[in-house]
Length: 225
Length: 225
DNA sequence: CCTTGTGAAATTATTCACAGCC
DNA sequence: GGCTGTGAATAATTTCACAAGG
Figure 1 (cartoon, protein in one colour):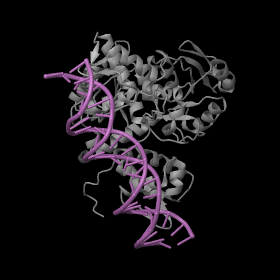
Figure 2 (cartoon, chains in turn purple, orange, cyan, brown):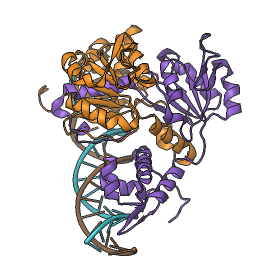
Figure 3 (cartoon, rainbow over the protein chains, first blue to last red):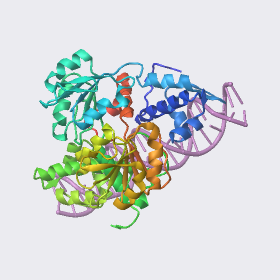
Figure 4 (cartoon, each protein chain N blue to C red):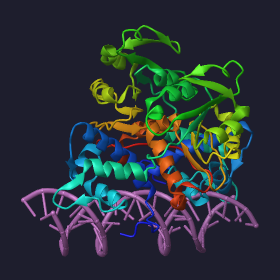
Protein backbone atom coordinates (compact mmCIF):
# COMPACT_ATOMS: atom_id res chain seq x y z
CA UNK A 1 0.00 0.00 0.00
CA UNK A 2 2.60 2.54 1.12
CA UNK A 3 3.92 3.73 -2.22
CA UNK A 4 6.63 6.10 -1.13
CA UNK A 5 8.18 3.92 1.52
CA UNK A 6 11.64 2.53 0.88
CA UNK A 7 10.45 -0.57 -0.94
CA UNK A 8 13.90 -1.90 -1.53
CA UNK A 9 13.94 -4.09 -4.63
CA UNK A 10 16.53 -6.90 -4.57
CA UNK A 11 19.17 -6.66 -7.27
CA UNK A 12 18.31 -10.03 -8.87
CA UNK A 13 14.77 -8.75 -9.25
CA UNK A 14 15.96 -5.54 -10.87
CA UNK A 15 17.97 -7.57 -13.34
CA UNK A 16 14.90 -9.62 -14.25
CA UNK A 17 12.62 -6.63 -14.79
CA UNK A 18 14.02 -5.90 -18.25
CA UNK A 19 13.32 -9.51 -19.14
CA UNK A 20 9.70 -9.22 -18.12
CA UNK A 21 9.47 -5.93 -19.95
CA UNK A 22 10.67 -7.54 -23.14
CA UNK A 23 8.38 -10.53 -22.85
CA UNK A 24 5.40 -8.31 -22.11
CA UNK A 25 6.17 -6.15 -25.13
CA UNK A 26 6.11 -9.26 -27.30
CA UNK A 27 2.79 -10.26 -25.74
CA UNK A 28 1.33 -6.85 -26.30
CA UNK A 29 2.39 -7.00 -29.95
CA UNK A 30 0.69 -10.32 -30.40
CA UNK A 31 -2.51 -9.00 -28.89
CA UNK A 32 -2.42 -10.79 -25.54
CA UNK A 33 -4.33 -8.67 -23.05
CA UNK A 34 -3.95 -10.69 -19.86
CA UNK A 35 -1.25 -12.98 -18.54
CA UNK A 36 -0.85 -15.19 -15.49
CA UNK A 37 2.36 -15.48 -13.52
CA UNK A 38 2.57 -19.08 -14.68
CA UNK A 39 2.46 -18.11 -18.35
CA UNK A 40 4.84 -15.21 -17.92
CA UNK A 41 7.19 -17.51 -16.06
CA UNK A 42 7.02 -20.12 -18.79
CA UNK A 43 7.82 -17.61 -21.54
CA UNK A 44 10.54 -15.88 -19.55
CA UNK A 45 12.05 -19.17 -18.44
CA UNK A 46 11.81 -18.63 -14.70
CA UNK A 47 9.83 -19.96 -11.74
CA UNK A 48 6.24 -18.67 -11.37
CA UNK A 49 6.56 -17.88 -7.67
CA UNK A 50 9.60 -15.81 -8.50
CA UNK A 51 7.64 -13.85 -11.07
CA UNK A 52 4.92 -13.09 -8.53
CA UNK A 53 7.41 -12.13 -5.85
CA UNK A 54 9.32 -9.91 -8.27
CA UNK A 55 6.17 -8.17 -9.45
CA UNK A 56 4.93 -7.77 -5.89
CA UNK A 57 7.87 -5.46 -5.20
CA UNK A 58 6.39 -3.03 -7.70
CA UNK A 59 2.90 -3.12 -6.18
CA UNK A 60 -0.22 -5.24 -6.33
CA UNK A 61 -0.94 -5.02 -10.00
CA UNK A 62 -2.50 -8.45 -10.54
CA UNK A 63 -6.05 -9.70 -10.23
CA UNK A 64 -6.59 -13.00 -8.41
CA UNK A 65 -8.25 -15.52 -10.67
CA UNK A 66 -7.33 -13.56 -13.77
CA UNK A 67 -3.69 -12.56 -13.83
CA UNK A 68 -2.03 -9.33 -14.91
CA UNK A 69 -3.19 -6.82 -17.50
CA UNK A 70 -0.38 -6.85 -20.05
CA UNK A 71 -0.53 -3.19 -21.03
CA UNK A 72 -0.86 -1.93 -17.50
CA UNK A 73 1.85 -4.16 -16.08
CA UNK A 74 4.16 -3.18 -18.91
CA UNK A 75 3.66 0.49 -18.18
CA UNK A 76 4.36 -0.04 -14.50
CA UNK A 77 7.56 -1.95 -15.18
CA UNK A 78 8.70 0.61 -17.73
CA UNK A 79 8.06 3.41 -15.28
CA UNK A 80 9.94 1.58 -12.54
CA UNK A 81 12.89 1.06 -14.89
CA UNK A 82 12.96 4.76 -15.63
CA UNK A 83 12.05 4.17 -19.26
CA UNK A 84 9.67 7.11 -19.22
CA UNK A 85 12.71 9.34 -19.26
CA UNK A 86 15.62 9.60 -21.66
CA UNK A 87 19.11 8.64 -20.59
CA UNK A 88 21.65 10.14 -22.97
CA UNK A 89 24.65 7.90 -23.52
CA UNK A 90 28.25 8.72 -24.38
CA UNK A 91 30.37 5.99 -25.92
CA UNK A 92 34.10 6.29 -25.36
CA UNK A 93 36.39 4.24 -27.58
CA UNK A 94 35.24 4.15 -31.17
CA UNK A 95 36.88 0.95 -32.34
CA UNK A 96 34.89 -1.91 -33.85
CA UNK A 97 32.97 -2.57 -30.66
CA UNK A 98 32.15 1.09 -30.05
CA UNK A 99 30.93 1.40 -33.61
CA UNK A 100 28.87 -1.75 -33.35
CA UNK A 101 27.21 -0.48 -30.19
CA UNK A 102 26.62 2.96 -31.71
CA UNK A 103 24.72 1.27 -34.52
CA UNK A 104 23.00 -1.21 -32.27
CA UNK A 105 19.21 -1.03 -32.11
CA UNK A 106 19.29 -1.85 -28.38
CA UNK A 107 20.69 1.64 -27.87
CA UNK A 108 19.14 3.89 -30.36
CA UNK A 109 15.79 2.31 -29.66
CA UNK A 110 13.76 4.04 -27.02
CA UNK A 111 15.28 5.75 -24.08
CA UNK A 112 19.02 5.75 -24.67
CA UNK A 113 19.90 8.36 -27.30
CA UNK A 114 23.53 8.52 -28.26
CA UNK A 115 24.62 11.94 -27.12
CA UNK A 116 28.28 11.64 -27.99
CA UNK A 117 30.96 9.43 -29.45
CA UNK A 118 34.46 10.07 -28.16
CA UNK A 119 37.92 8.83 -28.95
CA UNK A 120 41.52 10.03 -28.76
CA UNK A 121 42.67 8.72 -32.11
CA UNK A 122 43.42 11.44 -34.67
CA UNK A 123 42.09 9.39 -37.55
CA UNK A 124 38.84 8.58 -35.78
CA UNK A 125 37.96 12.01 -34.43
CA UNK A 126 35.84 13.82 -36.98
CA UNK A 127 34.57 10.64 -38.56
CA UNK A 128 30.82 10.17 -38.68
CA UNK A 129 29.43 6.99 -37.13
CA UNK A 130 25.74 6.21 -36.91
CA UNK A 131 24.88 9.81 -37.73
CA UNK A 132 27.08 11.24 -35.02
CA UNK A 133 30.47 12.91 -35.40
CA UNK A 134 33.22 11.48 -33.23
CA UNK A 135 34.72 14.10 -30.93
CA UNK A 136 37.98 14.15 -29.05
CA UNK A 137 37.92 12.80 -25.53
CA UNK A 138 39.22 16.14 -24.30
CA UNK A 139 35.82 17.61 -25.13
CA UNK A 140 34.12 15.18 -22.77
CA UNK A 141 33.42 17.59 -19.93
CA UNK A 142 31.83 20.10 -22.25
CA UNK A 143 29.78 17.54 -24.18
CA UNK A 144 28.63 15.77 -21.02
CA UNK A 145 27.32 19.00 -19.60
CA UNK A 146 25.64 20.21 -22.78
CA UNK A 147 24.03 16.88 -23.58
CA UNK A 148 23.29 15.91 -19.98
CA UNK A 149 25.01 12.56 -20.44
CA UNK A 150 23.70 10.07 -17.87
CA UNK A 151 25.47 6.88 -18.91
CA UNK A 152 29.02 6.39 -20.10
CA UNK A 153 29.86 3.30 -22.13
CA UNK A 154 33.52 2.35 -22.15
CA UNK A 155 34.76 0.39 -25.15
CA UNK A 156 38.42 1.29 -25.04
CA UNK A 157 41.28 -1.18 -24.65
CA UNK A 158 41.76 -2.32 -21.07
CA UNK A 159 44.81 -0.16 -20.30
CA UNK A 160 42.89 3.08 -20.95
CA UNK A 161 39.68 2.08 -19.25
CA UNK A 162 40.40 3.34 -15.72
CA UNK A 163 41.55 6.70 -17.03
CA UNK A 164 38.47 7.06 -19.21
CA UNK A 165 36.22 6.13 -16.30
CA UNK A 166 37.94 8.72 -14.12
CA UNK A 167 37.29 11.33 -16.77
CA UNK A 168 33.66 10.32 -17.10
CA UNK A 169 33.21 10.57 -13.36
CA UNK A 170 34.93 13.95 -13.30
CA UNK A 171 32.54 15.08 -16.03
CA UNK A 172 29.61 14.18 -13.80
CA UNK A 173 28.55 10.93 -15.46
CA UNK A 174 27.20 8.76 -12.69
CA UNK A 175 26.47 5.44 -14.42
CA UNK A 176 29.08 3.50 -16.31
CA UNK A 177 28.88 0.40 -18.43
CA UNK A 178 32.33 -1.00 -18.97
CA UNK A 179 33.18 -3.41 -21.77
CA UNK A 180 36.92 -3.35 -21.21
CA UNK A 181 38.43 -6.41 -19.54
CA UNK A 182 39.81 -4.46 -16.62
CA UNK A 183 39.08 -4.04 -12.96
CA UNK A 184 37.76 -0.53 -12.52
CA UNK A 185 37.19 1.46 -9.40
CA UNK A 186 34.81 4.34 -8.99
CA UNK A 187 33.70 6.60 -6.13
CA UNK A 188 30.89 5.43 -3.87
CA UNK A 189 28.13 7.30 -5.63
CA UNK A 190 28.82 6.03 -9.14
CA UNK A 191 27.10 2.99 -10.61
CA UNK A 192 29.33 0.60 -12.46
CA UNK A 193 28.43 -2.52 -14.40
CA UNK A 194 30.63 -4.75 -16.51
CA UNK A 195 30.00 -6.65 -19.70
CA UNK A 196 32.85 -8.99 -20.27
CA UNK A 197 33.14 -11.27 -23.24
CA UNK A 198 36.16 -13.15 -22.02
CA UNK A 199 34.63 -13.82 -18.61
CA UNK A 200 31.62 -15.32 -20.34
CA UNK A 201 33.79 -17.52 -22.51
CA UNK A 202 35.78 -18.65 -19.51
CA UNK A 203 32.62 -19.55 -17.62
CA UNK A 204 31.41 -21.64 -20.56
CA UNK A 205 34.82 -23.28 -20.82
CA UNK A 206 34.68 -24.08 -17.12
CA UNK A 207 31.35 -25.85 -17.35
CA UNK A 208 32.38 -27.69 -20.51
CA UNK A 209 35.45 -28.93 -18.67
CA UNK A 210 33.33 -30.05 -15.71
CA UNK A 211 30.24 -31.65 -17.19
CA UNK A 212 29.57 -33.43 -13.91
CA UNK A 213 28.89 -30.21 -12.01
CA UNK A 214 27.19 -28.15 -14.67
CA UNK A 215 23.94 -28.29 -12.74
CA UNK A 216 23.32 -24.60 -12.12
CA UNK A 217 23.97 -23.66 -15.72
CA UNK A 218 21.85 -26.30 -17.33
CA UNK A 219 18.09 -26.73 -17.21
CA UNK A 220 16.68 -24.83 -20.10
CA UNK A 221 16.10 -21.19 -20.61
CA UNK A 222 17.97 -18.73 -18.54
CA UNK A 223 17.89 -15.02 -18.47
CA UNK A 224 19.95 -11.88 -18.98
CA UNK A 225 23.49 -11.07 -18.07
CA UNK B 1 42.15 -33.61 -0.24
CA UNK B 2 39.87 -35.89 -2.26
CA UNK B 3 40.54 -34.53 -5.72
CA UNK B 4 38.04 -36.46 -7.75
CA UNK B 5 35.11 -36.03 -5.43
CA UNK B 6 32.22 -33.89 -6.62
CA UNK B 7 33.64 -30.65 -5.25
CA UNK B 8 30.76 -28.58 -6.50
CA UNK B 9 31.91 -25.04 -7.13
CA UNK B 10 29.17 -22.41 -6.64
CA UNK B 11 28.29 -20.47 -9.76
CA UNK B 12 29.20 -17.07 -8.27
CA UNK B 13 32.63 -18.47 -7.57
CA UNK B 14 32.98 -19.74 -11.13
CA UNK B 15 32.08 -16.29 -12.41
CA UNK B 16 34.78 -14.73 -10.23
CA UNK B 17 37.54 -17.12 -11.28
CA UNK B 18 38.14 -15.30 -14.59
CA UNK B 19 38.52 -12.11 -12.59
CA UNK B 20 41.17 -13.62 -10.37
CA UNK B 21 42.84 -15.08 -13.41
CA UNK B 22 43.08 -11.65 -15.00
CA UNK B 23 44.36 -9.96 -11.87
CA UNK B 24 46.95 -12.67 -11.34
CA UNK B 25 48.16 -12.35 -14.93
CA UNK B 26 48.70 -8.64 -14.34
CA UNK B 27 50.59 -9.42 -11.16
CA UNK B 28 52.74 -11.98 -12.89
CA UNK B 29 53.55 -9.41 -15.60
CA UNK B 30 54.62 -6.92 -13.01
CA UNK B 31 56.90 -9.43 -11.34
CA UNK B 32 54.89 -10.09 -8.20
CA UNK B 33 55.70 -13.59 -7.02
CA UNK B 34 53.47 -13.93 -3.99
CA UNK B 35 50.11 -12.48 -3.06
CA UNK B 36 47.89 -12.56 0.03
CA UNK B 37 44.14 -12.97 -0.12
CA UNK B 38 43.87 -9.44 1.27
CA UNK B 39 45.92 -7.98 -1.58
CA UNK B 40 44.18 -10.03 -4.24
CA UNK B 41 40.84 -8.97 -2.80
CA UNK B 42 41.83 -5.33 -2.83
CA UNK B 43 42.93 -5.42 -6.45
CA UNK B 44 39.96 -7.47 -7.59
CA UNK B 45 37.54 -5.35 -5.60
CA UNK B 46 36.04 -8.11 -3.48
CA UNK B 47 36.07 -9.26 0.14
CA UNK B 48 39.20 -11.12 1.32
CA UNK B 49 37.25 -13.93 2.98
CA UNK B 50 35.43 -14.46 -0.28
CA UNK B 51 38.71 -14.76 -2.14
CA UNK B 52 39.93 -17.39 0.30
CA UNK B 53 36.68 -19.32 0.18
CA UNK B 54 36.61 -19.18 -3.61
CA UNK B 55 40.19 -20.38 -3.90
CA UNK B 56 39.60 -23.09 -1.32
CA UNK B 57 37.16 -24.76 -3.72
CA UNK B 58 40.08 -25.37 -6.04
CA UNK B 59 42.31 -26.85 -3.37
CA UNK B 60 44.69 -25.72 -0.66
CA UNK B 61 47.13 -23.78 -2.73
CA UNK B 62 48.12 -21.10 -0.25
CA UNK B 63 50.79 -20.98 2.41
CA UNK B 64 49.83 -19.65 5.85
CA UNK B 65 51.90 -16.61 6.78
CA UNK B 66 52.95 -16.08 3.17
CA UNK B 67 50.02 -16.15 0.79
CA UNK B 68 49.67 -17.66 -2.66
CA UNK B 69 52.36 -18.21 -5.25
CA UNK B 70 51.18 -16.10 -8.18
CA UNK B 71 52.42 -18.35 -10.96
CA UNK B 72 51.23 -21.54 -9.35
CA UNK B 73 47.81 -20.20 -8.40
CA UNK B 74 47.40 -18.80 -11.89
CA UNK B 75 48.13 -22.16 -13.44
CA UNK B 76 45.65 -23.88 -11.14
CA UNK B 77 42.89 -21.42 -11.95
CA UNK B 78 43.63 -21.62 -15.66
CA UNK B 79 43.50 -25.39 -15.52
CA UNK B 80 40.22 -25.31 -13.62
CA UNK B 81 38.74 -22.93 -16.18
CA UNK B 82 39.73 -25.31 -18.95
CA UNK B 83 42.16 -22.82 -20.41
CA UNK B 84 44.70 -25.55 -21.01
CA UNK B 85 42.54 -26.67 -23.90
CA UNK B 86 41.28 -24.87 -26.98
CA UNK B 87 37.59 -24.15 -27.40
CA UNK B 88 36.88 -23.37 -31.04
CA UNK B 89 34.18 -20.77 -31.47
CA UNK B 90 31.66 -20.20 -34.26
CA UNK B 91 30.11 -16.77 -34.57
CA UNK B 92 26.71 -16.66 -36.23
CA UNK B 93 25.46 -13.31 -37.49
CA UNK B 94 28.20 -11.25 -39.10
CA UNK B 95 26.77 -7.75 -38.67
CA UNK B 96 28.69 -5.02 -36.88
CA UNK B 97 28.65 -6.82 -33.56
CA UNK B 98 29.71 -10.15 -35.03
CA UNK B 99 32.56 -8.43 -36.84
CA UNK B 100 33.60 -6.55 -33.73
CA UNK B 101 33.70 -9.78 -31.75
CA UNK B 102 35.58 -11.59 -34.50
CA UNK B 103 38.27 -8.92 -34.28
CA UNK B 104 38.19 -8.72 -30.54
CA UNK B 105 41.37 -9.66 -28.71
CA UNK B 106 39.31 -11.30 -25.94
CA UNK B 107 38.54 -14.03 -28.40
CA UNK B 108 41.48 -14.56 -30.56
CA UNK B 109 43.70 -14.37 -27.55
CA UNK B 110 44.44 -17.65 -25.90
CA UNK B 111 42.06 -20.51 -25.94
CA UNK B 112 39.16 -19.46 -28.12
CA UNK B 113 40.16 -19.69 -31.80
CA UNK B 114 37.56 -18.55 -34.26
CA UNK B 115 36.70 -21.68 -36.16
CA UNK B 116 33.94 -20.24 -38.30
CA UNK B 117 31.96 -17.14 -39.16
CA UNK B 118 28.47 -17.80 -40.47
CA UNK B 119 25.67 -15.72 -41.89
CA UNK B 120 22.74 -16.10 -44.25
CA UNK B 121 23.16 -12.84 -46.10
CA UNK B 122 24.30 -13.25 -49.72
CA UNK B 123 26.43 -10.13 -49.60
CA UNK B 124 28.19 -11.18 -46.43
CA UNK B 125 28.90 -14.82 -47.25
CA UNK B 126 32.29 -15.05 -48.90
CA UNK B 127 33.56 -11.87 -47.34
CA UNK B 128 36.75 -12.13 -45.29
CA UNK B 129 36.59 -10.87 -41.72
CA UNK B 130 39.47 -11.09 -39.30
CA UNK B 131 41.26 -13.51 -41.59
CA UNK B 132 38.33 -15.87 -41.84
CA UNK B 133 35.95 -16.30 -44.77
CA UNK B 134 32.27 -16.01 -43.88
CA UNK B 135 30.35 -19.16 -44.80
CA UNK B 136 26.66 -19.73 -45.21
CA UNK B 137 24.74 -20.87 -42.16
CA UNK B 138 23.64 -23.97 -44.08
CA UNK B 139 27.21 -25.21 -43.84
CA UNK B 140 27.07 -25.09 -40.06
CA UNK B 141 26.70 -28.82 -39.43
CA UNK B 142 29.65 -29.62 -41.62
CA UNK B 143 31.87 -26.85 -40.26
CA UNK B 144 30.99 -27.62 -36.66
CA UNK B 145 32.02 -31.23 -37.11
CA UNK B 146 35.21 -30.51 -39.01
CA UNK B 147 36.36 -27.75 -36.71
CA UNK B 148 35.09 -29.34 -33.49
CA UNK B 149 33.22 -26.17 -32.57
CA UNK B 150 32.62 -26.06 -28.82
CA UNK B 151 31.03 -22.66 -28.37
CA UNK B 152 28.50 -20.89 -30.54
CA UNK B 153 28.21 -17.12 -30.32
CA UNK B 154 24.92 -15.70 -31.55
CA UNK B 155 24.98 -12.13 -32.82
CA UNK B 156 21.95 -12.21 -35.08
CA UNK B 157 18.87 -10.02 -34.72
CA UNK B 158 16.49 -11.26 -32.02
CA UNK B 159 13.91 -12.83 -34.34
CA UNK B 160 16.46 -15.28 -35.80
CA UNK B 161 18.18 -16.14 -32.56
CA UNK B 162 16.10 -19.12 -31.47
CA UNK B 163 16.36 -20.69 -34.91
CA UNK B 164 20.12 -20.20 -34.99
CA UNK B 165 20.45 -21.68 -31.51
CA UNK B 166 18.40 -24.70 -32.58
CA UNK B 167 20.73 -25.20 -35.50
CA UNK B 168 23.80 -24.88 -33.33
CA UNK B 169 22.40 -27.44 -30.93
CA UNK B 170 21.51 -29.77 -33.79
CA UNK B 171 25.09 -29.42 -35.02
CA UNK B 172 26.36 -30.63 -31.66
CA UNK B 173 27.47 -27.31 -30.19
CA UNK B 174 26.87 -27.57 -26.48
CA UNK B 175 27.72 -24.11 -25.17
CA UNK B 176 26.07 -20.98 -26.44
CA UNK B 177 26.72 -17.33 -25.78
CA UNK B 178 23.77 -15.28 -26.92
CA UNK B 179 23.97 -11.55 -27.61
CA UNK B 180 20.50 -11.26 -29.11
CA UNK B 181 17.85 -9.64 -26.93
CA UNK B 182 15.60 -12.68 -26.98
CA UNK B 183 14.53 -15.38 -24.58
CA UNK B 184 16.08 -18.59 -25.83
CA UNK B 185 15.40 -22.14 -24.83
CA UNK B 186 17.76 -25.03 -25.17
CA UNK B 187 17.75 -28.72 -24.23
CA UNK B 188 18.81 -29.72 -20.73
CA UNK B 189 22.37 -30.58 -21.62
CA UNK B 190 23.25 -27.35 -23.38
CA UNK B 191 24.89 -24.42 -21.62
CA UNK B 192 23.46 -21.03 -22.39
CA UNK B 193 24.58 -17.62 -21.25
CA UNK B 194 23.33 -14.21 -22.28
CA UNK B 195 25.07 -10.91 -22.79
CA UNK B 196 22.47 -8.24 -23.10
CA UNK B 197 23.25 -4.62 -23.69
CA UNK B 198 19.73 -3.38 -23.26
CA UNK B 199 19.27 -5.22 -19.98
CA UNK B 200 22.41 -3.56 -18.67
CA UNK B 201 21.20 -0.13 -19.74
CA UNK B 202 17.84 -0.74 -18.13
CA UNK B 203 19.44 -1.79 -14.88
CA UNK B 204 21.52 1.39 -14.84
CA UNK B 205 18.43 3.45 -15.66
CA UNK B 206 16.60 1.78 -12.80
CA UNK B 207 19.24 2.68 -10.23
CA UNK B 208 19.56 6.21 -11.59
CA UNK B 209 15.83 6.60 -11.15
CA UNK B 210 16.01 5.27 -7.60
CA UNK B 211 19.05 6.85 -6.02
CA UNK B 212 17.70 6.08 -2.58
CA UNK B 213 17.95 2.31 -3.03
CA UNK B 214 21.06 2.04 -5.12
CA UNK B 215 22.87 0.37 -2.24
CA UNK B 216 23.81 -2.97 -3.79
CA UNK B 217 25.17 -1.36 -6.94
CA UNK B 218 27.29 1.25 -5.33
CA UNK B 219 30.37 0.80 -3.17
CA UNK B 220 33.35 0.85 -5.44
CA UNK B 221 34.73 -1.75 -7.74
CA UNK B 222 32.56 -4.56 -8.88
CA UNK B 223 33.26 -7.51 -11.06
CA UNK B 224 32.32 -9.18 -14.32
CA UNK B 225 29.02 -9.74 -16.01
C1' DC C 1 -12.84 -23.50 -10.35
C1' DC C 2 -9.05 -19.98 -11.24
C1' DT C 3 -5.11 -16.82 -9.75
C1' DT C 4 -2.54 -13.43 -6.75
C1' DG C 5 0.29 -12.02 -2.91
C1' DT C 6 2.90 -13.42 0.87
C1' DG C 7 4.43 -15.51 5.25
C1' DA C 8 7.38 -19.37 6.25
C1' DA C 9 10.79 -22.79 4.86
C1' DA C 10 14.55 -24.10 2.25
C1' DT C 11 18.44 -23.10 -0.17
C1' DT C 12 22.37 -20.51 -1.39
C1' DA C 13 25.88 -17.01 -0.77
C1' DT C 14 28.63 -13.97 2.01
C1' DT C 15 31.04 -12.63 5.89
C1' DC C 16 32.95 -13.33 10.42
C1' DA C 17 36.26 -15.04 13.43
C1' DC C 18 39.67 -18.03 14.84
C1' DA C 19 42.51 -22.37 15.24
C1' DG C 20 46.53 -23.88 13.15
C1' DC C 21 50.59 -23.18 10.50
C1' DC C 22 54.59 -20.68 8.71
C1' DG D 1 53.85 -11.41 13.42
C1' DG D 2 51.08 -12.61 9.34
C1' DC D 3 48.16 -15.53 6.67
C1' DT D 4 45.37 -19.54 5.18
C1' DG D 5 41.44 -22.50 5.37
C1' DT D 6 37.14 -23.29 7.31
C1' DG D 7 33.36 -24.05 10.58
C1' DA D 8 29.76 -21.14 12.30
C1' DA D 9 26.89 -17.06 11.85
C1' DT D 10 24.55 -14.00 8.99
C1' DA D 11 22.37 -12.35 5.02
C1' DA D 12 20.14 -12.83 0.74
C1' DT D 13 17.44 -15.27 -2.47
C1' DT D 14 14.43 -18.76 -4.11
C1' DT D 15 10.78 -21.77 -3.59
C1' DC D 16 6.83 -23.68 -1.26
C1' DA D 17 2.26 -23.67 0.04
C1' DC D 18 -1.88 -21.57 1.13
C1' DA D 19 -5.29 -18.06 2.65
C1' DA D 20 -8.01 -14.74 0.47
C1' DG D 21 -10.00 -12.70 -3.66
C1' DG D 22 -12.35 -13.04 -8.20
